[in-house]
Length: 356
Image (tube, rainbow, N blue to C red):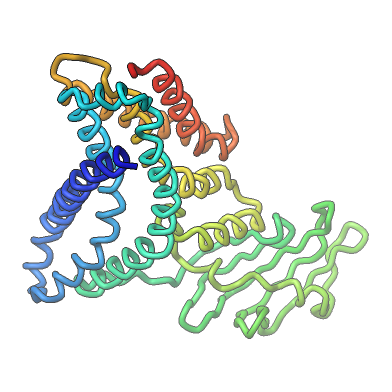
């Protein structure tokens, strides 16, 4: 218990200092990038400060892995360079036993980091982007022209010349409906379609029903009308970035892609990455423990180089596996979690042969 308190006291002082420094650097970088636009639009200092406040959680999120890496690596290397770990080993305490509380803390902290991003970083960053666009007069129209939307895994296809998001209205609408075996069931043409409660209401609809290999004009069938339920959000001129929404919104977006019969491998791999990425905290701490004491010369510098290099390899490996998942060469789950599993295994091996 005494050893644990001593280790955490050294670790937390370094971790907090590195976290504040890295977060401040990221904030200043974002400010410098946008400063000329703020000055050009004469944005008041108070509103700029509010933007920075909204951006702070995202900066903290990206700074935490670096701060954890620096804190754990520097603390352990400092203990090793001062021969304090020798006293720990002499007391009959192994390296794993000495650091297991730190490893457990990093594992639990990974879950906290996921929750931090999901419930605080995502909404505050969305507010920051919206407020910044408002200040800089960047307006994005949700209206869309010449659109095609696939629904029910390709069994319903909407085509429209124009979608008005404010009125939730489609203009010059064609709807192609197919049977379970993908054979043509009917084609519906209408001047407009307006969203009401849970379905599209057509104006002057004309239905062409497939009968005996030909299309015949028939009244709009109630069963056909009941299938026109694709929500207006699908028709909006917006692109959802799975990385910039919370897990529930990302899941809903993937479900929409599946209903439309569109490729979901990339979106699904990014969705799994939202759960896998926070465990970089656990990985870097485990690596710091395994790599500590690998050299007697320039202990602090060499240990930092080892850990930073390993962290860089983690990011590179994750980029590669995510690309493989995007193109469907490996499952999306493997694309997100393979780096975590690989580097955790490497850390176990390093710890097994660490000097104690």
